[in-house]
View 1 (tube, rainbow, N blue to C red):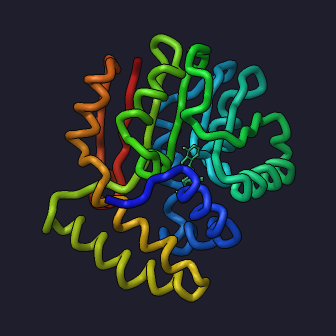
View 2 (view 1 turned 30 degrees about the horizontal axis):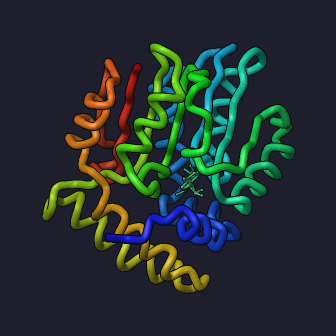
Length: 233
Ligand SMILES: C[S@@+](CC[C@H](N)C(=O)[O-])C[C@H]1O[C@@H](n2cnc3c(N)ncnc32)[C@H](O)[C@@H]1O
């Protein structure tokens, strides 16, 4: 089992913040933004709606949502790492997206009684939460009836499948050595360990249904490397 204590996770992301966007672009060859666009477009956010990007990091998804729901709607970007949020805020000011509501918070501390969101996105956040079921339940509670939610993360592929072998080799021989050049070996070695503990697609579907989502879909993208979980309350 790996350490998923929120303080530990927060430190990991504070430590990588100075190279976070750079390494994301490098390791995904710039493709992560297309996967994020696919997540957002599957959920069809509309002008006037209220959305949240939970575990928003440097805000890629928050900005995509903001374009679609404004001028009449609102977007919240929530993250536990103050350093990543600062980068998000700086980018926001540059892009003249000044009206995004940034919140430094553990998502489990958000007030679920509000049931206020038309939609929620989370990219590469679920795998880092202390408990995946609790994370999906929290999202369920924060949504209005008929609200939509989408999660993008690494796909936990079947053992010994092409996807699983490729993922392992890529992380071990590309991601970890390159991140070591920036003194971030431990932080990036964490990815492989966290995928091992992350539920497979079928299990995520089952969790979504058990929690009470009416529509639940899971699909893999990029040759089975990534997975999109799409839910409707
Ligand atoms: C891999 S990053 C993903 C960031 C961004 N969504 C992206 O796709 O680039 C995971 C993020 O989850 C945040 N995080 C982890 N646990 C959290 C929690 N309990 N509450 C809020 N944010 C959390 C981390 O600080 C980090 O920014």
